[in-house]
Image (cartoon, rainbow, N blue to C red; front, top):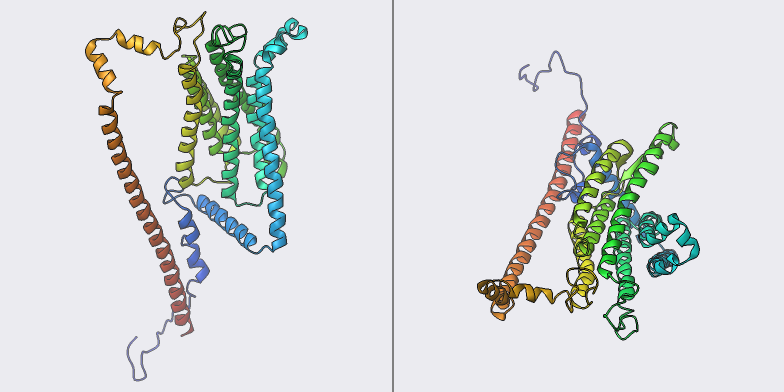
Length: 448
């Protein structure tokens, strides 16, 4: 091949023409901007499986479609949607109110039901009445969350908003039911807060019905822990495995019903609820943390077996940016809920006169100054110094400085992450532009 008078000589063996890459084929090899925006620390690592990327992209596209549909609604359609949401939220409030009233009734009616002749003559009924508050709370925590999922799917929100609403309602149900149980027990112990009542006037608590009220508190937390374990075992052994076995024998859509989704947020909320129960009951039942550890080990291996044999990945994902804030906040809320009854019992309720290590004290807290007075003088001076302003003021200042530094550092990291996300989106747009240019140039070369 050489240069002739009219230009380049034609190749005696011309290569067959191969069309260049199309725009769609090039774009399929590039990550979409929606996927790049969705990625975050702990959600999808770089180099994740293609199936995970497709799933995240589908979720993002589905949410974008829901938002477009919401933006295109007329005024009448918006009024209808908000009316439906209002009615569904009223239904949620009614379900929560019925659950809390049931917990309060079950706790307050236990002693009265045990006095019935039928219950006293039947050991099985007596055992069921004795565990009635724990049975009711465990049943409510098992039944209502699926109902919340069904209600959230009818409200017309995006998947991310549905998950947040389901988790908020489930958290409120679990922690508030535990708080209602504590309030009901407090009413029984302190005669409804009336220290001048006939049953509470002598000892400061109802010594006739609850001669050892600390034991009753520990028993209730132990029962909640036990029925939480039994509920988890019953769901796995009596529902999940038989459902997988029966539906696995059936072809088609019925067989796909046997595969259940493994919801990580629900499992995390279960752990937080169990930890809250342990925080409340460990003061009254010191072996409760050990029992909870044994329960977690047993459930861990059973859930691992269930995960690999009967479950599939969840279709509704929970974003890492939300999880990093939501779950620690729920755990902190559980700590606050557990601290209220424990601190109230330590400072305000007189200890039992017939049992317990504090039976000769006016309050449980009164034992602490007496114990400190038996320590060496140097240790006493150090402990009393911890309660003075000379220690509290510098500690407050140092804590404030560290908190301000942490907030400033978190803000700078947030700005850096936002800038990196913008750069990633810009890189994706540049790749799309270069792909378009490559397709255009290959088309021009093919035309020549």
